[in-house]
Length: 189
Length: 148
Image (cartoon, rainbow over all chains, first blue to last red; front, side, top):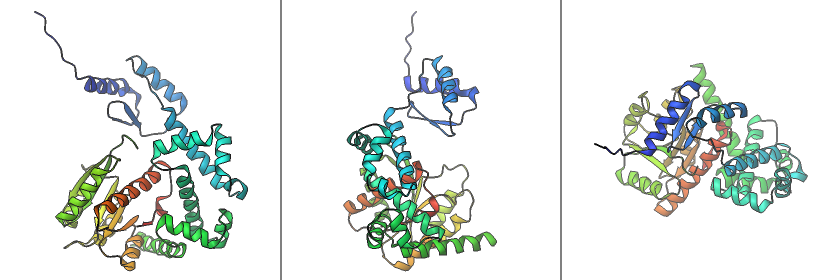
């Protein structure tokens, strides 16, 4: 008598991944069968080891190139913004293309596809984050900040800050200071 | 972001409001899973249950009977396991004082709930996208204040 087996491939694959990774001590979540969300920093070396463990079961780790590239773009933007160099900030597209060795059009396309936002918006967000840090530190005037982040005027900086956060820089400053006081009072209770 | 489900917890005593939010979330290109609670007391019971998986975002109605959104917010910020939750407060009023009070007590986003569903969808998409940037780009959450 021959019996036929019906397989639930997704379930089998999941079980297999769990089985293979059981002894690795790795903290991870397995999403939708084929996304391995690793909850710790993995060095290239450990990634190779994981690949070897999984390859025994016919499984291979793929870091999608697009996602890896977006990560590189983001890192490059953070780097460019942190340099506070007016010349670089005025030509971010040129510098991104040069740093990453791809055309800006290509980078912009991949970025929007993966993040649902544009490189331009991301740069604005990063600049405003940098501005928030500077405001919160209490060491800079709004004029200093506008100048360092290559805004043509304080008014232009204030407008972009308001458009991005919904708050004026002065209201942001007041709220951050009061928030700190509340947190301090609570910590002392 | 494409395949990851964003877990959302919504606290609102008004059934129509809850339905608006659920409908708006369902229409977005970002995949969400929404759990709702009907008031502040139910919210705190849910959040302090250790077996519950914490949401990525908590949407909190400011005006609820028995325990208001602000009271919940203050309580949440005093509980270690919960104090890093991203909290979106919304209200039908556009009181500047309400907005400042919620930010000072640790809310990240303050929304005046739009009257139209189309606007609500747009607002929610914006909040989810910005929150995602904080999530993936290592931005400083202490400075995460957004007023829409």
